Length: 175
Ligand SMILES: [Fe+2]
Ligand SMILES: [Fe+2]
Image 1 (tube, rainbow, N blue to C red):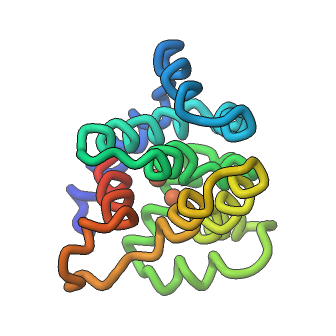
Image 2: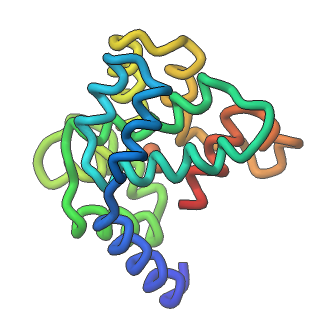
């Protein structure tokens, strides 16, 4: 990643970190999620809630609508709520990821404690979030989308954005 791209990403992170959903947004979310899933959503940091809403809005604009996809959009990062990260930890993840994705993966393996915590959250939150959503009665498809949301298909996979997972990843990557 070039210096300008990194500066851009840091600015983007800063604005994202200060974002929060409105009451109207929350009412909209409540109409989509079941009560247990809503409890999970409410446990997320406001900035993560705003990010999830942005991902859902992008998908809502597409047709045909899939309820499972909307639930997955709203809860795909819910695993992060187990260990809320600071702005600086998020910046660190971006910097290390830009330096070496192998390093990011290596530091992200293992237990969520110590200096590696932020990296473990970055790598393992899809798994944690999927388990949390399953416990609250999310559909198997929504759970699977959450679990796989960081498992990118090879770039040359034909029509990968036609799949629900591809759509979720495209909408997630753009915010
Ligand atoms: Fe994620
Ligand atoms: Fe995300």
